Length: 170
Image (tube, rainbow, N blue to C red):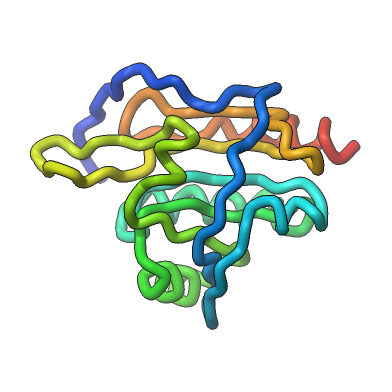
């Protein structure tokens, strides 16, 4: 069994259900290439599940995408990740793990700050990572469901997320 420390995260003023999802433009990466895309351009094609996760090397990231794959969410809704990792790291992560999603690259953590989900890493001045978070966003850019972890590591309540996706898509 893998052992790790669980760290409580401070309270945060994050985007809540019923609020407008902040729009942003960042490199959106798949396993072959990336391009600058905005969240609003993705939503033009339908609802989005935005999944914030720690940098690509963290075990949590692999587990989250394994669960998304097992539940076949990418067949129902546009699933996009959000992480501080670079486009190169995202491309490698997606390719090596066979992830069927794309990930926004936010190395400076500006989008994380806009969503209230940045996590200042202890002992590393100026370095932030994503705290685990999930947002189900409808075609009007309204957040229909929001979950933000209060400890690290933590994992989304997958059944709740699945219910929120079902409620949105009917």
